[in-house]
Length: 443
Image 1 (cartoon, rainbow, N blue to C red):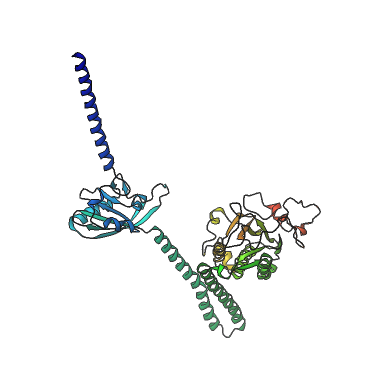
Image 2: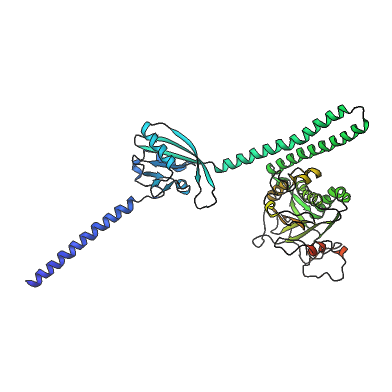
C-alpha cells in the first residue's frame, strides 16, 4: 500500500507540473502574439474592411492608432523613417495631432523636420504629415518624405538666382556703355573704346546663353541615340585648335601625346565640347610661358572589364589635361563641378568664363557612362581626367604608337633614355609635381 501511495503521489506531482508548464507555455505564446511587428501590432480584424489592402499600396508611410494611442498597424516605411518605436508613435507633434483629430474629427496637416536616424551630422528629414479619422475609434496618419523634393527645389531656386545674376551683369554693362557712347558722340576715340567694351560684354552674354543651352541639352538629351566611334586624336586636335589663339597670346605650349588610335563611343559634338572646356580652363588658369598637355591611354574598366552591350567593350579611355597653373585648394575641389561656381571670380571675369564649363563636362561624362576626376595642388597645377568607354574591339595594349611620342603610356615599362625634353612633353610636369594618388596619365 505504501508503494502504491508513493506512485500515486509522484503521478499527481507530475500531472501538476505538466499543467503548470502548459499554462506558462500558453501565456508565453499569447505574449509573443501580442508583441508588435512591422506589419501589424494587433489583429487585422480591428481595421475596417479593405483598409489593410489600401495601406499596403500607398507610397506614403502609414500608421493607424487606436483610442489608447497604440499602433494598430504601421507600414515598413514608417519604421524606416523612425516614426514607430516600441509599438508607439515616436514623434510627439504627430501624436498630438492624432489626439486632436480623435477629439474633434478634423483632418490636420503639418510639415515637420525630423532628425535623421543614425547620423550625427545634424541632418534632418523634411516630411509632410496628414492625420484623419478612420472610423469611430481609429486614426490614420500618412507621412510623406519631402527631403528630396526640398533639395531639388533648392537647386532649382539657386540655379534661377545664379542665372539671373549672371545675365544681369553683362546686360547692365551694355546699358551703361550704350549711354556712354551716346554722351561721347562727338569723341570718336571714346566711341571706339566704348564700342570695344560693348562687344566684349555682348560676347560674354552670348557665351553664357550658349552654355546654358548646352547644359540643358546634355542634361535632357540621350547622347547615345546619335552615338558613334569618335577618334580621341580628332577630339584632342579640335580642343587644341579651339584654344590656340588664347595659348599663343600667353606663350603657352600645348602638347598632345599618349597612346595613338584610341576611340571612344558617344556623341562627337558633346565630347568635343567637354574636352574643349577642360583645355580652355587649363589655358585660362595657367601663367604665361608654361605648358598644357593632353594625353590619352587605355585602362581596364572597373571591376575587371568585360563586354558591354551599350559601349561594345569593357575597356575605358582616359584623356588627361594637365597644366602648371594656379591649382585648386582642397575646399574648392569638391565644388568646382557645380554650376556657376568659380575658384577665382576675378580671373573668371577677366577670361570671360561663365562658371558652367565644368558642369557641362561632368554631365557629358556621366551621360556617356564615364566620369571626370581632378587632382590639383595649389601653386603646382592640376590634372583633369576624363574617363569614357572605349569604342570597338579591345586592341593589343602592347602595340607601339607610330609617329607619336610614347610618353610612357603605351609601354609603361620602357625608360626614357635617349630622348630629349621635346620628345617627352609631359615629363616636365612630373619634375615639378609630387607623387599623388590621382589617376595620372603622366609618366
